[in-house]
Amino acid sequence: MELDAKLLQDLSQTSYACSTLETVTGGLTNFTFRGRLVHPLPDGSQTVIIKHGEEYGSGFADFRVPTSRCVIEQEMLRRVRDRQFPPVVHQQVSVRPPRLYHFDLQTNTQIMEDIAGSERLRDVARDLSSSKAVDVDSKLLGMLQSNAMIDDVLHRGLGEKILAHGGSVDVRDTAEKQLKTVDGEGRGVMYGDLTTKKCASCVSVLLHVQIQGGNDVIKITPIDWEACRLGFHMQDLALLVSDLFVQHSLESCPAALAMIRGLVKGYGPVSDAVVFQAAVYSGIYLFLWEGGGPYAYKGEQVGGLLDIALSLVVHGATKDREAIKETFLWGLLA
View 1 (cartoon, rainbow, N blue to C red):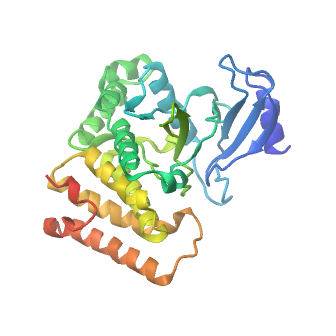
View 2: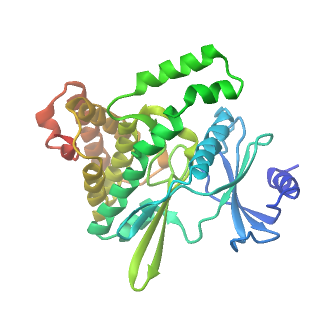
View 3: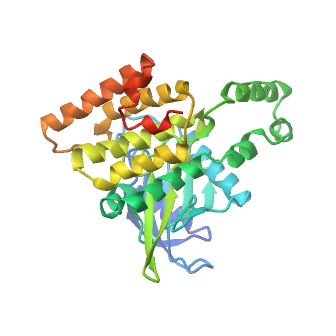
């Protein structure tokens, strides 16, 4: 039985029965569909997004990826939903996670909201004004840096929760010890897949623009939370900044540079150690600029980009503060 037919059959036994499935962009790991519901949801929605995971990638059959990623993603979204975190709102920009309606653990299938009229942030950036671009990225990063979310998910009663769910004392002690290794400046829960385009995993940011009273109301929804893990927030920043810098360098997108400034400003000054880390990560991600697929850029454009990538790695590794002042990361320096 074809996958779409099997999913339709499985969904027929739920409140999310669909009459048809349409394949949508889902990156290289998941099989993603838009389903037209037999019966609209209470909020009037007539379609949903279905994300199905297998032990292999949807783009490469030989690419092995454990389905535990599906469990991680739905767990993160469920925790955010259950704690009713409000959207991060600033002026005309709001950021929130997608709604998770249902998860089937047996089939690794998630049912999520379909955000009508959504586009990739990468595509919308071409039409954004510079001032709006700064607001967009500073607020997006603000959501990812939410200390309240990190503390609530990780630290509040962790030991008791582990024991309550059948974990042993050894597991509890190991988890609490591991958390201590990631405490500190710029450490904690990281998103892990924050880009403006379709990359090795998936389209990571959707941006929906509505016109209300002549003003643009920009709503951002980061999707694909399966890469969430303990780590360094700077990896999220570096991935998004480097992705924007590729768009600035190779596509001459004016808003991209403004968005980089917004991100750096939103993150704020950090210690030199964290800045050096940001430089190394940014350089590495610039080297991986082709991850989204083939592009027809001139050799000198790519050569210039790779030169910058190399210099960032070197500046970060050698802790060259003065050299970093001359890069797009200068705003991180205290």
